[in-house]
Image 1 (cartoon, helix red, strand yellow):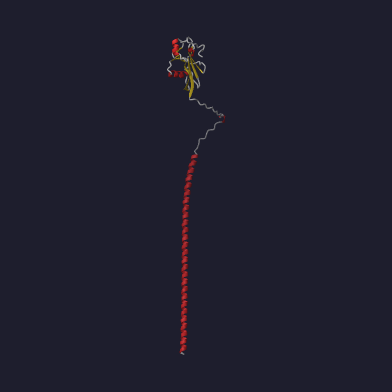
Image 2 (image 1 turned 30 degrees about the horizontal axis):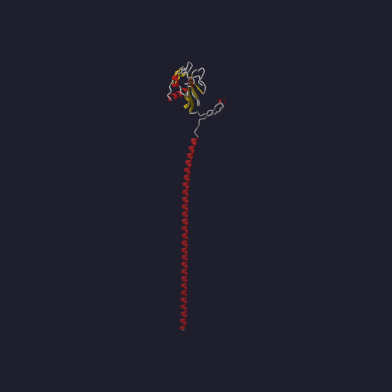
Length: 258
């Protein structure tokens, strides 16, 4: 009997021990399950918080970008308005300067109109100086030894029979024969006697050889380009290339000086 009781007690105690262990395991399992749920809940909460923070950051970033964009648009708008205002001012100024009123020309009656013709004159270039030549001849006296007294002939008549022979000089336009003659005689210290008369300058004597020294028809004469002018040496205006020939003649009626 005692063995049976002991056995029954042992079974009962064993059963209690088993139940206790089982309850402990169940308790541990419940605790672990609870912890897992808590961990999951914490993880879920953390994830939710992170998502919300991310969404908030994105929202803030979007808002900042939107604000920046709005500011840039506002600046661009103001700049465009300022540029448009300046352009309008410049355009207004330009238009004002171009629209200055001009006097309206008075129409001319067609009956008074005269056709015009344009003529082109040939251009001629005048020379600044003229080239002329001068010859002073005593050939008539040279060829007639008795035309003058002997002492006068030897002293006053050159061996060549010329006081000047083809002397070329440059003169200004408007120069006369008398001016060329006086200039040459003065430069060469040759005596002359040229008098003023009512008809102009008159050559009385050159190199101390005077009119009438070789006869009643003797005296000084001149030609230009081989022609005897009908006026005095002071009135003849030279042209370019003119040749002056001044000579002493024994008889002007014969013009025997050539």
